[in-house]
Image (cartoon, rainbow, N blue to C red):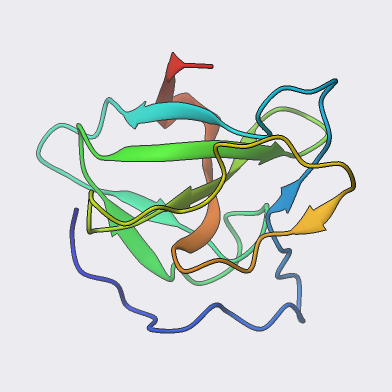
Length: 120
């Protein structure tokens, strides 16, 4: 994964929207995904579910992400990810209530067309 433009989670104001973890009948709140279709370019990560915000990071083909949230139209997906593949983002266990992701990994939003589900 490419380096992060933001070291901390973005502030959730001005159109920014946190990635939420939601209960799903005992299933994990997130599915594993992989970035596809960027080619030689990069996929922009936004701090909310709109591309009108400034990008906070960039991802490349093959980067693994956790797909955790979505917008109403299905155009954007809320992701959790880390440039360190050994870091546990702690999204692999069911949750009992809706929670904002506040773990050690980064979170943000990407266009759903640039990611495919790998597992979950």
